[in-house]
Image (cartoon, rainbow, N blue to C red; front, side, top):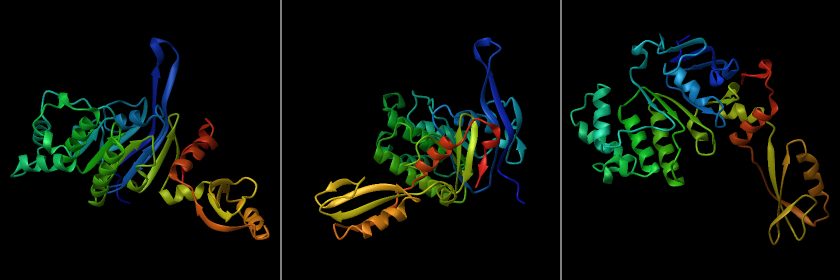
Length: 312
């Protein structure tokens, strides 16, 4: 079996609160492997342990216990981080530089050898919609423009492994869509992507696997299809008629809607069929989403270690 690009084995992280004897557990028994060329989404609420896991994965923080290997090496070995690019949740850029200067500096620090380095950097700024301000100081930028600059910086270094902590933070809806499209291209290049998010709606199509983390423990790991099939399905039922059945909400003059569980669906369909022509089925579709699946996994698990880390 090929060696994983990243391997976290029984990683725990504890802190002492305010120099007291009270110990806070940030991460508990984290086991995670990421394969070469895989795209993995790391999903959890704010404070779930996403950023701590990423910092430990990169050797920026030491685990209290456990082992971390990156590119087959102990993560404390600087060689393990070659061709790795990381964007933290709140990037601190050299704001006295321009975006072009920042990208050129980053490319040189990564040892990138390209005949037309300036053209390479400008092309990345153009992809993120900031080529027009390539020579303006970053300190004059809005949060969204700074985030675009930071993303362009991370990708322009041509990493083999890209780690993004909340990459869509600070972006408007159009910006989020554009960034997701760029990351889809990166994913399709055969390189490895690991990203965290607390909102699944924008990033559902980006990952081969999702890892759900809550309160410092991994709750579930699986492909989008596996996670959806493991959570109870819900269906939106639309009926057409002059009046709706019990539990339906009117959405237009003759159209009514109701969402039911998979278990309740057969009985509802029988009720519609036996309505005596007062209404008829208009449409039926599954309304499950990864967002709902995540919430169900979080709500259905307890803090006992035996219930954590379900791999699908």
